[in-house]
Image (cartoon, rainbow over all chains, first blue to last red):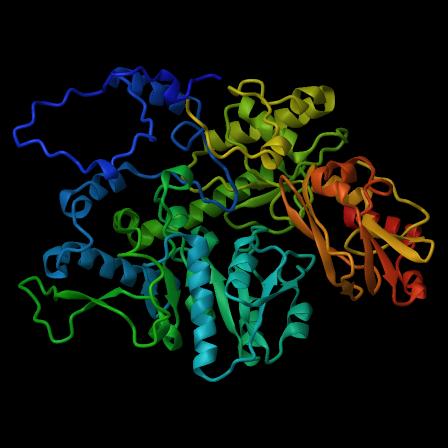
Length: 487
Length: 131
């Protein structure tokens, strides 16, 4: 191994800090509550620091390299988010303290609810869901509750395009619905005819991502929404790709009934291992009573203070589907997302989406003569889906290209998703990359295409520079070891 | 990448192959399908005795990158499953038309097999998908 496990660095009796003599009487813990089967590593402070610093240097991260992981929106996390999240009033607030004493936190949550309503054009928001997939599950439970409340119990089908994130069918199945897959048309839109053929009075709704995972804006979105509504179904918007639409299009105005946001994508809160995520759900007027509680509202009848700020309180809507999570959602992420929105303002957020779309189209324009882009005749939105199928290099696959990019210092793009694009390379540069960085990234892709023709083994054995070279993914999937036994 | 087609088999659009085997129909996934999936790590099979209709999902194949349902070529009863795949799904990658068979079916109507695409039509489908 490149770096020993922290347990292997352990030496009996060594400690990171020396505790002072206790100035309160010693209390002997009941022996039946003591355990001796939990070996914690015993290490000095400097060895701990070195261990984790060395590990961090083995990592590819947004702070070290462009991270064009499609459909994930791995944008830069501005440091001011961290400053604000560490303010004592936010960082040290206790979830169980009297809300009257945590008005700053409630004010922030209320404002964030309002911002998220405005940005996507909805009537109500719950900040409860812990991440995107839980947001989807929440939205589906709301749709189900809406139909049941009307006494309409036969709506058991959820229509989902074949370009959807895998979480869409998973969330629907978890809510007990039957998933019906819809094909895409040649221009990358959901196939209208197939949609209409499946619309009947058993349809709970349609889950749609716009722009979809082919990076395409759904050209018939208004007709799609109208058709689903005409059949009595609801339209769920997967907000994973909201980074393309800020200040430009409002799903709520297009007629979507429910949508979740991914604060860890669109609103720059840490993503992946740095999470946790946060997946607020926004709904149209007819669904606000079903939102999971608690949400924040101005206390009815409360007096405003000198600055015109009312007293805020927790509130659970009358037909709420219930709680989705303990306490008040992933509050630290709400602070960061609020900060991001306040820093950018309306014009700034619009510029975020404009630059995200511009950057993706720049990459598309520069690579599409070398890497096939199935929807290359259209402008893409915030991400471009190319294929790792290179002329003159029949044995080279998307995976080999992705691995080779690491040798050029770039995190690989998403590969083999969306599933309907063979050998997919899904590139989402985000708005935070400069033209210089985009050029370096594209130059690397073009150089790799040349290598693929001249010396494909360079790609087949890549990465050469990564600490552990090519990992055995099959073995990792089949012989998964989740627990390292110590001693 | 080019894939092979078993000329004695019939095919579904979803890339399953089916071939007569005495009174039974033997079924698996095509060479193209295993290539597109890449290294398989898990195969889900039905139970012997399950009665399913043509087009019903009878199992699934999973690779490091994706999972995909597998569908019945004809209506009938499952009479055998290839249990070797449970421990060694890579057999499908190595020999999709032979050792990599997934199920044997007693068809409700043996003539149903003739309704499926033949190898020539399947090759044309692959060509069309390629473009």
